[in-house]
Length: 545
Ligand code: VG1
Ligand code: CO
Image (cartoon, rainbow, N blue to C red):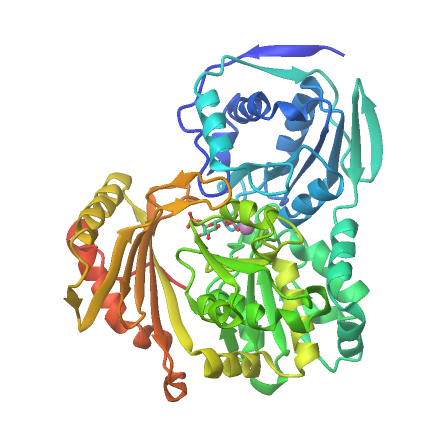
């Protein structure tokens, strides 16, 4: 077998964002673009030589072609064993699990997550380390720096590998194994949750669910778990077949993009008891009850308050964590349980050390992400199973569980406003302006709310003491309302400003307000502070979640 060394020159834009490198498919199709980045990974992750690599993606356009290239490069770099999902498919949580289960040195996941796919859509690549979690910033910084000095990459001259069925191929010193993408992950779920209890209700249709896989990766996982193993009805999963362009849809599980699901759940009494959707790579989830939406921040708080009721978490939680923009609903629960609640920057990589050090058991993000110490990624199907298990134990509806939670802990009205497609320079200037403004805000009263904390969030990792600066502008008012501003790190065009708005309401008589109306004061303050109209000519967001 011949190993070719191909000359190449650097691309200036290979800096990974919140979750890997994301670009338009057309950019990844540029000659040597993918190869350069993969070479940069191999140059830093030298432990892959002589060890195992897990490889798979969310099935979007360019997935299998990228996998063939990476296989050849992995062979050239002396990886001893590569496990690849059949047809190149693996969800992000499944990769995390497979790395841990097989003590692999790492994993490469091909996904742009919730971003649209297809030839004109987005593609992405991320590296997960031996703990199963997204590589730390230190690693991705090294990859980026390395990518700026690449002058060649190594690739084995071998035929494409047949990915369409399970099997093994010995290529030189490398064993390539095509594996069932679902069964190991499904087994893990069966270890954590009480499948017998759930099956008893789902099988006889005492409990009905609807899961929207959005033509993305979770279709095969949901079919195996909810239908084959738990006996849910045949119509319980919609959009179950992974498609290269997600059927033209936007695989982002929110009230706007999971339209068909929302319609089914808002049909009144005939609606299923629980509805859920997942994103492109299967790590996000949206949860609905009958005509009822639970926001992801509340989901985390409710899970934290009730985890001890599930057999998989009956020993209690060591602690919890949420990202900065996630509402502080979970903080209230942690205080009551007398467990630590950590506030981290956006992105799952910051939870890794806390999980590895057993400081936390559960963690979550406002962007429809939830997870636990079972793996090192957020996990959509796990979260849905958590809720299903909780419903069977509590024998209450999603709405009843949520309302009881608000009555006990108070309600955090919460919303995220996204201003998309801003010119990057303008967005940077806006953030710079805010950074200056917050230095002088403390003690000021805005729209009747007095600022008690205002800063540019910095995080000191309590385990390795690494410091991450400029993670978002945070303004907290003395009535526990809060506004956070930050720029997205996952987009592929221009800049997206995210404005996170929150208001705490202890009084149960005021737990039925419309969310945007409840947040009207915060919205007005945010638009004003960021000078959105003057700087960007905008005062209305493009997307409200
Ligand atoms: C977004 C979310 C963030 C999440 C990240 C990756 O990042 O806000 O909470 O961790 O996506 O999720 P940003 O930088 O665009 O705000 V996924 O499911 O896209 O891998
Ligand atoms: Co995702």
